[in-house]
Image (tube, rainbow, N blue to C red; front, side):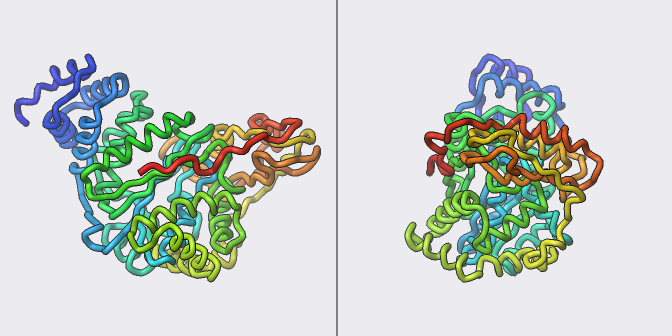
Amino acid sequence: MADLNVYELLNRKRRGAPLEPREIEAFVDRYTRGEIPEYQMSALLMAIAINGMTAEEMATLTQAMLRSGEQWHLRDRYDFIADKHSTGGVGDKVSLVLTPWVAACGIKIGMLSGRGLGHTGGTLDKLEAIPGFNARLSREEFERCVEEAGGVISTSTDGIAPADKKIYALRDVTGTVESLPLITASIMSKKLAMGASALILDVKTGSGAFMRHYQDSKALAQSLIDAAAGSGTRVEALITDMDRPLGVAAGNANEIVETIEVLKGNGPADVEEVTRAQAIRILVMSGRYDDASARAALDEALGSGRALEQARKWIAAQGGNAEVVDDYALLPQPAETIEVKAPRSGFIAHIDTYQAGMFTVDLGAGRKKADDVIDYAAGVMFDRRTGDAVKAGETIARIQLGRQGRDAEELRNRFLGFVQIADAPLLQARPLVHEHLA
């Protein structure tokens, strides 16, 4: 679009006026090719963050970003292949459990996932705690793993939505990360470029979620669904709770252990419940199951051990040492474990999950900036969780350090600073799965 008037376009968006689809498409294309400078893209991002976008603008932005690179159209290669996205949280290992569990029911699943940044853990970081696991796959390797193991989780290739990579780097330094239209376009440009048959969205809500307030989480879920209109990918969303850490383990290697324990039928009930809810929707969206038969198939896959065997195949297909399924000592081990005792008797009323996530990051289990090195052995085990009764002096958590030398008392005090103990039990626990949107 040679006649694109960038100055006028920025002025109109600054005033809150909508942009034409052709203008958005041209702006994204020319920025990706280096013809529009970063300061003008920064201006547009700030205008969008302040004034928002119409549904049409948001859909156009999403499409323009996904068309900036490769489009895999995987649904044309397979009868059905599912994808999944989570907005992130603390202890969220659902993708790790979901992949082999769904594959054990005969449904192919593939994800282009991300690494941890900020208080949320990264799915790829957790997987890379497994010796030899390769999370950097080419498209050919990605498809080979789907064929061999029925499931795969990999980092996005450089060819997928390069516009998003450039734009996200600017959002991070211009205070525009939390813009709903920009979040939507960023997530969906990558997911729709992969071209799965169906996509389940796990949108978190609560103190450890990207969107803390329920209505904001619901607005994001609906925005993500709307952005997929006409794409050929069926999208549904579940709003799930992140007002407490999910499961007992938060970290990397310890979450791999917990994942395997869930697949053995011994894991925390909350992880199994949230994963099952998403797995049911994937199975139903495949058209091969209804709700009742999906539940039965998942029960059988877990109870028979087939989901666990699928995990072995998956780990091996991506180069990992599948013996970790039977020998957790093959995973990185903490050099020191610090027990945190309850200061008084009562009931755990609340755990500030954002603070819990940042605490875990500070131990070395996550990143504060993109080039930080992960300590796979570091993390936290929440032995007592929200709603649990505790006695004074009882161990409520174990802090795992990959390296010795930290001040144990300082870490204990900091942990207790984001845990509330009340005299009376909770009147009503928050649901794990709040709502289903389609």
